[in-house]
Each structure stands twice: as C-alpha cells, then as structure tokens.
Amino acid sequence: MTVEELLARCELVLASEKRLAECQPFSCGENDLDEFFAKDCLINQSRLLGKTYLFCLKEQPDTIVTAFSLSNDSIRLTNRITDEYKEQFLTRSQIYGHWRWSFASQYPSDVLRFTKD
View 1 (cartoon, rainbow, N blue to C red):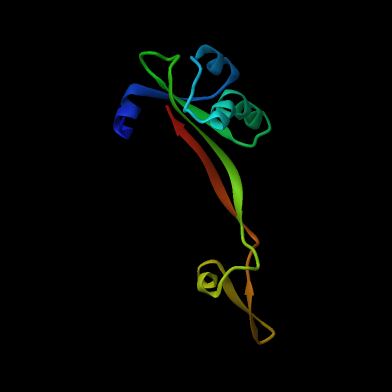
View 2: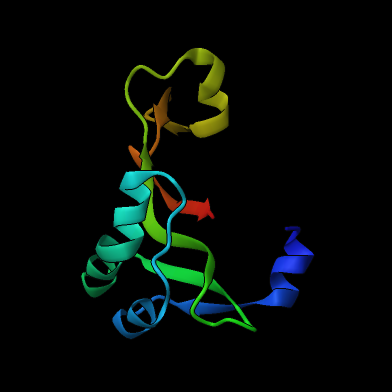
C-alpha cells in the first residue's frame, strides 16, 4: 500500500483503551512490538511519555492497518566524539582569549516506533 492509498483508505486515530477494545487484535509479527501496541502504548500515554496513533480502514474501522508511536527523547553526546564530527555538533566560543569547545551533552530528538501489518 502506498502512502496515497493509506491516506485515501484509512483514518488516522489516537490509540485509546476504547478504540483498541473495538479493534481486531493487531499483529506486525514482532512479539515485542505487538505487546507494546496492545498494552504498553496506553501506559506511555497516561504517563505523557508518548502518543500512539493508528491507521484504521475507513470501511472496516475495527481493522488496524498500521500503528506508530511518537515519543520525545534526546541524543546523548559523549566525550568520545571524534574530531571529524566536532564541527557538525559543536560550536567554538572564545573565553579569556582561548578557544574552547562548548556543547550541550544532550540534544532534543523524537523517537518513532512504526510498524505495519
């Protein structure tokens, strides 16, 4: 199914206890992901750790075609960053006449769990 077909044939809905109970069991073939989308995604939502969305068929709203979860996270930089990448991630600032590298140890990021049936 192409993205255009997905958008034409499916409705995007927020996962909820009620919606998951109304739908047929969803399986992408990976046990950990199946369990996450069946149970853990709602726990994450209640703890404000992420939001899970479902694409359900418009003609059969109880059929989940695909599911994905968005959660905020960060990318952690360590002291092991190589000189090759310093210019990409770090900025130089002049303090007391000396150049030093300064950077945040974490950068905001989004995590996407995405699966299709």
